Image 1 (cartoon, one colour):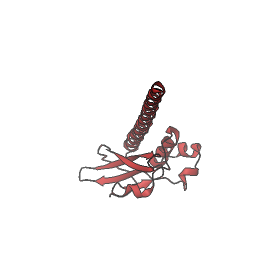
Image 2 (image 1 turned 90 degrees about the vertical axis):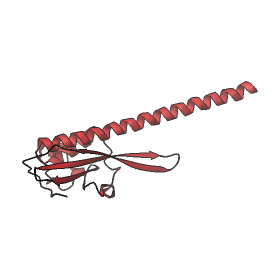
Image 3 (image 1 turned 30 degrees about the vertical axis):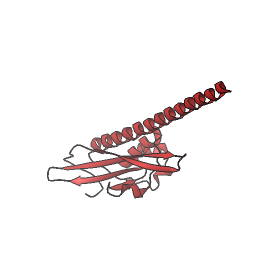
Length: 158
């Protein structure tokens, strides 16, 4: 009888280790995606010398052809987010308070104007949900572009 109880404890420890390790892997993958999205947004803003908003009405229903043929920065960012598999519906606009304007795709951009030029603060988010204790929380990932001297943006300084 004592051996069967000892085997049950050992099985419990193995299951607990597998659950914790799987959770760690899932969180680290989401964290990596949020950093990739933030870095790509910064790269696209710097390449386009500013952030131009989309002319397409509803980005979520736009096709890949429409997004790839557009010259706006917002469309290029949304196409990248859509292709990488970033959780675009996990973040709502209330999370962007203090981080700038919310854009379709779950990120925020704030334009900062200085005497030497303009730069952008970009924020992407990680949403972690823990179903066993029925809680979720959001972690912001922040970054800034280099100074852009000739800014052809369509958004105002904030």
